[in-house]
Image (tube, rainbow, N blue to C red; front, side, top):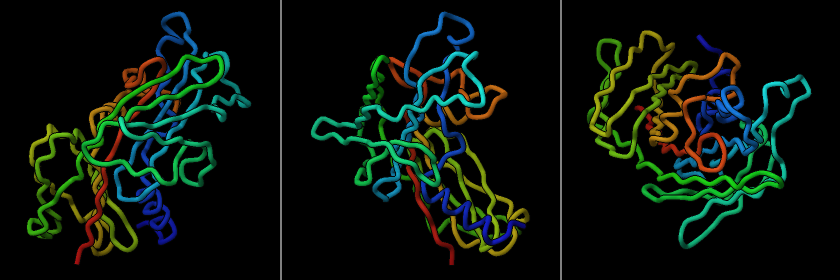
Amino acid sequence: MLNRKIILLVMLIIISCDLPQDPGPMPTEIIAQKFEPGHNVFGVLCNDGQPGTSFLHVERAWETEELTEEFDAFIRNATVTIFIDSAEWDFTYMIDTVHNEIYTNPGFLPLSGTEYGLIIESPELPTLTGTVVIPEKPAVDSSSIKIENNYIKFSLAAAGSIRMYDIYVFSELDVIDQRLISNGDAMEVKMDLSELGGVPNLIFIYGYESNLAAYQTSPSTIKPQTYHETVITVDGGYGCFGAVSVISIALD
């Protein structure tokens, strides 16, 4: 059973729209082909009802021989812009206790079904661009939530823009999770409460669109947080620009 301090930390990370991987993909070209300099981004637009939780890690792609203990690929002077037809938002560099070094905008709140564009510019590197459509919020039929025979069960409504779910069930001192791949249809969820210490009192559900779902499920190298070699969802560089929608459900 996790102690209270650990659980509070886990809840803070989840509520803050944190995701399992931080720096984004690095290019396979650094091994297989002539190295092409460029930005390497891991960007997540968070549709969680809280302005300012979307973030981007911005690094430069690096060659393998550069990797030393002193190596630092993060770019701190980039111009990072998120835009739609009628508006744009400048994302600025900051140091964050959850995500470390990121670009963010405290007033930005993405909307379900809206397509957002990304432009990243830095001296001496090609301009990186990308687009993503914010997925709809996961939807649960509250009458379907049942706890029977030490299982919690509920129904997820059809959501055509969601390609993967991460589901977390909390008690006061513990948490269990489940990942489900989706084709957009309605789904039935069943989670074993025998692995959860305490009485379940909260559900968090993350719904990922296709860019971020592909990144989260792609194979990575043996070195953590370097790159997911099969996934590039941007143009003019490397990495992933994706989106996630989040809901929480309090249990009686």
